[in-house]
Image (cartoon, rainbow, N blue to C red; front, side, top):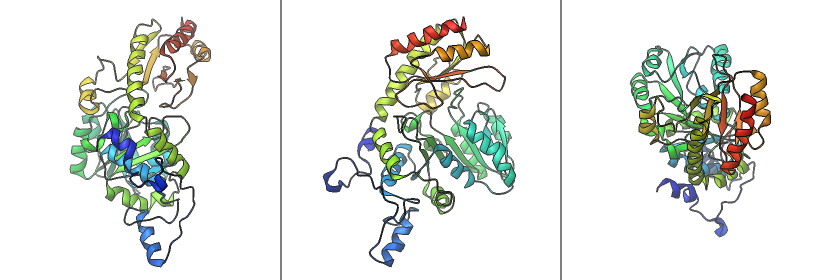
Length: 380
């Protein structure tokens, strides 16, 4: 079954009362005919039986969603969580113990970096942060106690890639688990498992859900890794997705292909627009034909890009940059992406420079460029 058909049908073979859309199983628990059924159903929620007992551990809406995403990612299993950080925390905690060491790219999602840098050290877990574009530097940072390599390719601000195949080959030889955030690309534009990555996480809030009305996290991987995780972090931390958001996720994923194709087209058009603007000093976009990692983009992502684009403005005055952002009318100030609305966020880079990241939504493109054009007057 190919991806577009998976999105519409996989996991929905049982048409309950003929409903073309699965019902919402808005229940906290499931009852059982006898003790034997209860015991069997308890196993299913961790992937080893049939049936359900408690929605904190498993629910039919979650199972349908998880089957689709696992098939799209090309993994044996998938679990969905109440947020991206819930998925990431479960993945990381299931991969370390006291004394463990992590190698992570320095441009990973901010809260993920906080988890590694500020929270885990009190449990004796340390992290080395590296520029993931330099594969040798990353591999040279591995220690005997390294248990996890944390990647994010492309990263969500500067869109830097890591070489999955080279990294995972060494990691597997050394018995080190690998995790990557695939939120930028979705499995339609990149399938890290095919390149040896052990665990793939997503902020399902973004392209999967697609309507800015669901907070969700996704973790995909092997049955062995996710089965062990569900025995502990998956159920003990209480972070699984509730039934109604899972149902909304299914609804959003119906149009994933259409939205990904459109966001890619619009992102590339926005790149061409920004490239011509005198206010822009440097642009970061995966669709840039002259991107320094173009060969890796082609081999890992099939040349695809998305609606995210960042640039460093020539003007670095706080007052003028804030005036630019405040003048935007259609672009809204917000940190996410993947929904219907165009967004702008202004983070500061580690070198102290301001960066402007745009997400190109579904509004009329001429209206969007006109909005940026009038706001750019504050940067001249």
